[in-house]
Length: 113
Image (cartoon, rainbow, N blue to C red; front, side, top):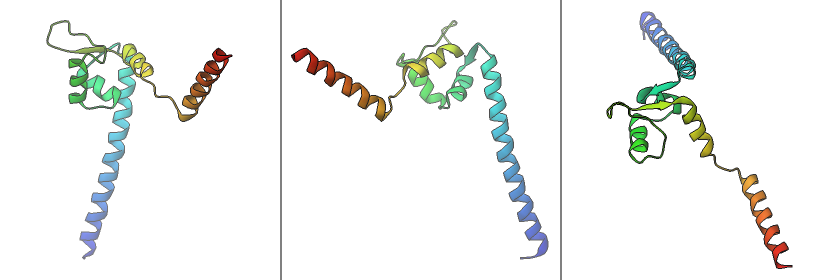
C-alpha cells in the first residue's frame, strides 16, 4: 500500500470517528430540546423514548400510551405524560420481588394464627 493510500485510509477513519461523535452530540442536543418542549410529535416522542416510529404507532393504535390526536390526523404526546408512563411501567428488581414475596409469606403466616 502506498503512503498516499495509507493517509487516505487514516483520514477516512478519522472522519468516520468524527461523524459518530457529532451524531452522538446532536442526539444529546435533541434530547435537551425535547425536554424544553411540552408537546412532542411522533418523531420527537420516538427519539425521546428511544424507540422506533412503528413501535410508537403500534402503541397508540393499541392505546397503551397516552397521546393526543386533535385533528384526527397528527399524533402528539405530552412529554410529562410520557415520563409518567415510563415510571408506571417500572420493572421490579430481584431484591424487590424477594422482599414482596417475603412480606406476602409473613402476612399469610400471621393470618393462620
